[in-house]
Image 1 (cartoon, rainbow, N blue to C red):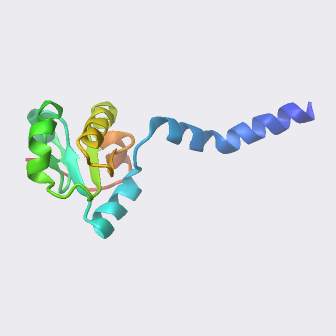
Image 2 (cartoon, rainbow, N blue to C red):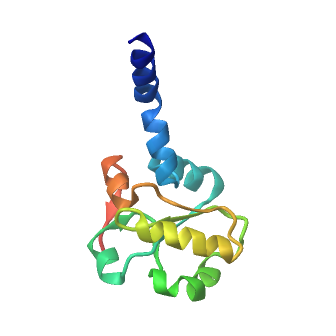
Length: 127
């Protein structure tokens, strides 16, 4: 009985870390630090219509299908952190993997996407 209680307690304690690690990506608060301290570039990989409905303030729109062609034009230095964002994180994760293959070693997805950005009360703008 004591062992079961200890195991359940340990799982409850470490569950947030396990879930966060499984989803991957950078948390919104970490993204803000990267933007402010290291001049990270925030790229929204949503389609233009989605981007127009609302996006993280300061983000640039490159739809996922055009990432390979447009990212090198927008981000010249492959040593800069690149944070990719979409609505909930799926496309951004694929975009981060694609950007890493292109040599952007510090490319990563925003965990939870624009939804997490909003939940963190970070600024959103519409075009």
